[in-house]
Image (cartoon, rainbow, N blue to C red; front, side, top):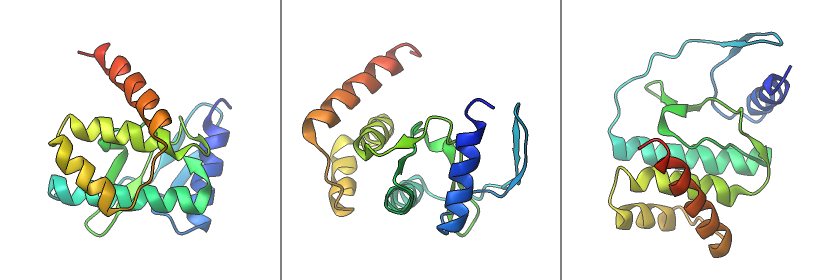
Length: 145
């Protein structure tokens, strides 16, 4: 079953906690099928704001860190953001999610904009863990450049 059991558990938790994710239609030991979501256009800034709101809610309601903070793992259906891909999720340690998302956003926005956004959402991050995770993310991304 690999990580699918964990993903199934997280999708079910999201459903119970009213956290937006696509409906899980089928799961086997080899794959899972989610309801297709037709993405609607939204400005980059609006999407980032909604992603942060979704992530904060996800952390508070599930106790999980999502992992894999690439923006294509968040879909906008015209009304709300839906989170997908929980393969790298784990309990706690939300700072890793925030550091990873911060790194992703700094590649697409001015760093000062990202900082203001995080401050406006009152995201408090342990600075040592943040720096460690941020450095790891930068190193990981160098492999793809």
